[in-house]
Image (cartoon, rainbow, N blue to C red; front, top):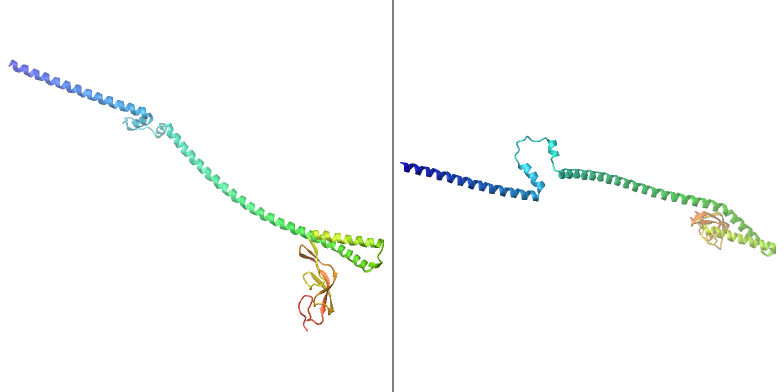
Amino acid sequence: MPSHDDNSDSQVIDIEDDDSDLSLLAAQAAAARYEKAQRAADEARASKPAASKASAERTSISLEPEAPAEEAAASEPAGTRQDLDLVGRVAELERALEDQAKLASEYLDHLRRMKAEFENFRRRSQRDLERTSSAAKTDIIVKLLPTADNLERALAAARKQDEEVVGAARALLDGVAFVHKDFLESLRREGVERIDVIGKTFDPRTQEAISIVPVTDQPDGAVIAEVQAGYLLDGEPLRAARVVVAKNAAAPATAPGGAAEDG
């Protein structure tokens, strides 16, 4: 019997030794796994410390109650808050830029309208000035034409007595002729042109018939005499010439205006 008891004790000792070996192996395996996990964590923190820290905080199980929204906002990374502020500022600047662009477009439209109105005003003013200047020049020239008429009458009267004009009278006549010629040249420089009427067909637009004379050697309606000279200003009638118109008895009767008279 004693031998049976000794065997039992040795078996118990062997079982206890096996349990000790298993515990040691389990502890060593756990330690290895821990060291491996620790190295992985260190490497992750070394490469992305901020991201690892944020990920660890999100994945960790906390027994504490959730923090209020204000604390959560305060706990956000500074970079995230700066990004949000920058996005908001950019949006604000874009809105301000759109407002300024709209205002600039309105100002441009207003400026274009003002430019068009000013251009129309300038053209109207230019036309009014030209009309006023032309009217003033016409008025002055019309007042000067009688002077030319008087000089012509004086020359015509002197030429009738040409043979009797001698000495000082001849010099005076020549002087009047020079004054008359110079006066007409001054008018010509201002756009005044004398109307040539003798031998031409009567033109009611530029001529005024003061008498009609029966003739046989002139075409009917021809101007045979000029009582007062007529003038054009810039190609337009300034003063009608006063003329004598021929009436040929052999030709059909024609009124000074060009229309045939009824028998």
